[in-house]
Length: 288
Image (cartoon, rainbow, N blue to C red; front, side, top):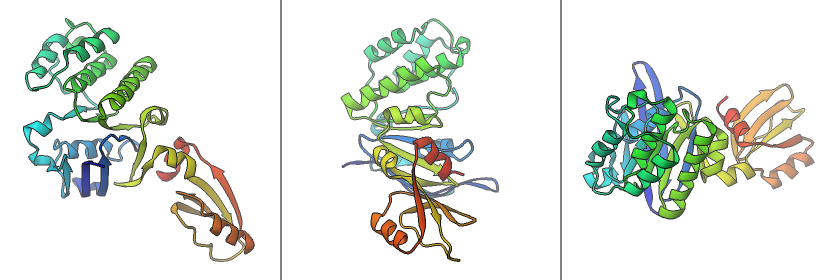
């Protein structure tokens, strides 16, 4: 499997506040990765750092096997990006903006542009400044998809879209992945959107990727354990992600249940309750 993106020990601070505290992360070709994190945890900082929009304090990033800040023109053209905030020229019309951006690419799909403009009912003569936030977001998505990139990076791409717009956008991702083997990273706080399209989930908390795995594996294996024990010292729990002490033992989140350990604990008189969890509960527990 081809590694598209690799991040090693990435550290980034704003003044005295450390936002990223040593991020290690690797994305493979064809993955659709949903990046979950609470507001202010550094999702945008991480994405902008790997795109060389933000500088960082230490660490290194490679994209398509090249240093992120020394990408060839060919590899830069293989990346599509939709920022959280509009940074395009607002006095241009939609048509003029599309034509302006088209000049910078050797590959550009006019048919893709026409298809999305028609489907999303965008008036090409409207100026960017006249559009609603949702319409601006749609235009930004079109600009990212038109060059037919191999790596798509979206920062809260559906935040300004209504439910119908979000559904169309997510459908477009599924089509791209199925037809073109595109790699996608998108940050979001909407777990239901992630579950519709992602095959992997990453959780950013306290400046690090605290969890990263296949979505199906996550939903099947990550559970809550309530460990009740009369002993002074609680038993060690295998595959532990997070633990909180309570009056009679531990409240644990584990990446999988070790059945042999579970049987051994029961034989020793420990009371352990296994509770399944949904993705939203997992996210909230791991970032509490």
